[in-house]
Image 1 (cartoon, rainbow, N blue to C red):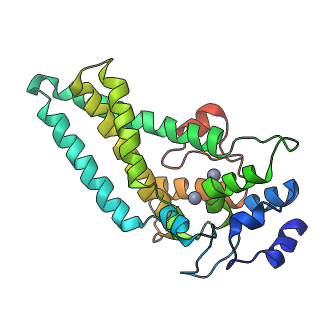
Image 2 (cartoon, rainbow, N blue to C red; image 1 turned 135 degrees about the horizontal axis):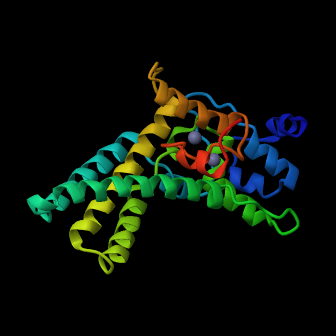
Length: 242
Ligand SMILES: [Zn+2]
Ligand SMILES: [Zn+2]
């Protein structure tokens, strides 16, 4: 905590953050990622020296939602186009399977890639910058809106990869149904994640529990609560908050 207080005095938000974190010690880096920094609503967090790099990194939530939901509707429409009436139940099962697959992918990525354990003796200043440029910026500044949702270009690339990988193994109908479920799950993840940080209050218990688990991941223990749109896999793998 003392390290974090020291950092708060040193950190300059008008100077590129990635250049500053490259000068951090390992302990300072841990403190930077573990303790959220407060920023004013609308305040800019400058990551790179080149403003065009920062612009590429930012995504508008509402544009993202517009794109994602239109994409989900298109995929579901294509799926139904390839579904004959007797296959409808199977298509629904495939869609639900896609949703379930998304929750596992989300858990896996968040736990093993975005929070990958680092060996202090091997970590380099460039690695510090890479971590902060990825998930680290969201942990250091959870209230910074432009870096929360997934870039639509990445969603298209992932979709093409999933489609090409699956269509060799199963029918076009099944591929599209599973892909629709995965992209619907991803869209719900983006919407829920944004709501957890900036949304209106709710008394709906399942949503409250999801939000509580994610906020504990930010503000209490970053080694637990990796599921965002579902806590299922945290229960399965024993990483729920205590
Ligand atoms: Zn995280
Ligand atoms: Zn978050």
